Length: 447
View (spheres, rainbow, N blue to C red):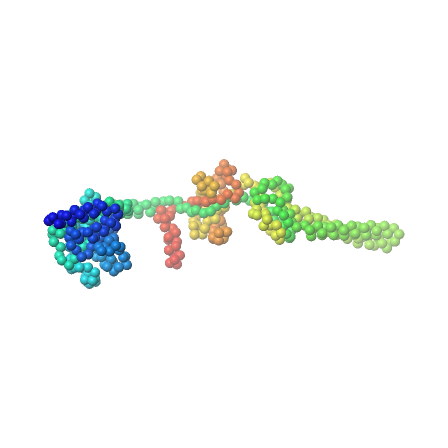
């Protein structure tokens, strides 16, 4: 090594130590190296023994154009060279064994004489951090290769300091250099037969058990709802008032008709003492009085029914009372529910896509929105055979579950919502993990 080469070598190493970023270091690698050994073209490819090599820097170019045919050519031949036994040693590249298409591209993209210069880290089990691809029109000498090998060690340490390898890359390297793949594959196959309980998650709501339906006894319209949602009422409390204007009028008319008929009957009975012919009308008027009394009784009962009262004590289950005021109703139409707050159960809406086979008595865990940490135990009571559309426009099966302990259910109130986890039969871990993909594949293929 002459004085000029030694000076160039020291200057390059000094530039490596002064580099503050990886981009600055790669600029030194691809451009300033020609001060020590002349070349026409330099390309640095980043990647270790496992990863594919990617062009990161090109001499005389500030950036790398990933769409360039030259970049695609270099990466193609470099990754093929990386699979050879000599991939971790510096050596001239012989294109004689290349495919005809690559040899043709070589004459267009690169000089004939190329050098493969890997950057190795001896302290890290000879780990490769990248490759410098050099090309020129003259053959490479052993002295030049020796100088570049010395410089490659300096470059490797500099690049390693900037670009720490990812954990995944280390794992792949360990994975590929040991017997781990065989053992891991066997372990995974065995784990696929591990029995686990199949489960599903669905929205749930605490609802009343066997609530009393308060339905309209008449055809008419709602005048006013006298209670509020969640209100506690006693037996006999007024719940709903229906429009009674027409009923009052009908009752008043019936009363007047009855009074008129009774007066007529009384007059006829008095006249019968002086005129025997009047006695013939008494029986007819007596029958009319009976009819008018029946009509009055009917009108009064309808008027009484316009005021709906609670048949027993309970909690009112109702949405917005304002929505009912003025709304027409028919006989038997449900207006509200009256429930015993101590008699509750769990309603679960399982989407069709998440449905699993469930039997009576299967375990359910309820996680309330207000207390998502602690689970409340329940058991399936029954499940609907046909799905129904939920307010969220999702087809779902309705399941009803009963709570296991009275202590846990005492903390609940009607209307509480949460998420229920349903547990079914034991299946293999493979089926548990791939049930949905298998279902989607069958639907797509039409099995």
